Length: 336
Image (tube, rainbow, N blue to C red):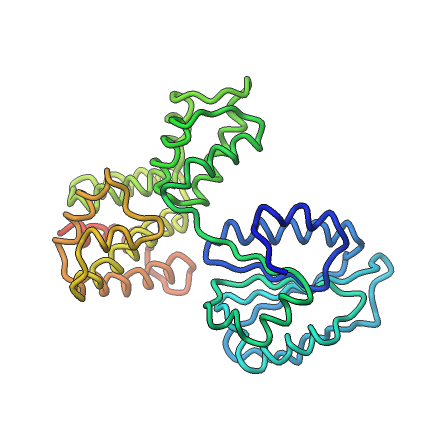
């Protein structure tokens, strides 16, 4: 049974299904849907939980669908399978098909997947799971939908917001749902009377390290080389986690790389802007245009290699200062 995201809550109020497949390329929405299913499974007695990450040459025979040794505190079991690629492979597809043919009575299976291609949704394993249980596709929230998504989420937190303020938050987070969700959670703590205003939103956003990191990328893309070392040094002095800054830098550069490749292939700039998820906002188009004119496609792809080095340094894999590597990368992107 395929459901829309908004139908999941009502379905979970009924009896648990043997299997749930939640999939899509918007990680926040997928994880929040999975959290709802986990919570109901726990309330139904599934205190035993197994988590399997399907990567590379995964051995599906490791998963024992039936377990005769449930703990004394559990009447049900939850098997959680993470499938980031969106494809279980030949062996996995057969294992899931067999599961659907003979589901165990004491087990709920929750499959959390990346985007599943349209062709894969016609496969035997997918159709079998869809017939047995619940499949929930989660679609990205585009730029036009984001203010409405923010308004709904704010109201769920017991706050009041108008369309203009929701649009303000949407513009500041540049379509990033994780950033929007974090911002709303913070605003819930800051507002005492339930009414949001522009001053509170602007102050809250300005105090967010993630947004400072996006501000860093604005300076980088504009070629403001003198600002880059100062911004990075301030973030470092304030004790901001290097990985939090790096995630924003990585997100921005990956978008630029994708657009640079499209331009090399003959795609028009406006089409490249519109192809992004979310699309490049109008106010940011001049900045991005300037950055894309600064380097060719090959140079942009070379920056990806430097990002891999920064990631390894930040995680302690290599003995280099990740902040210095990050500064070097940003200066080079800025045109130094």
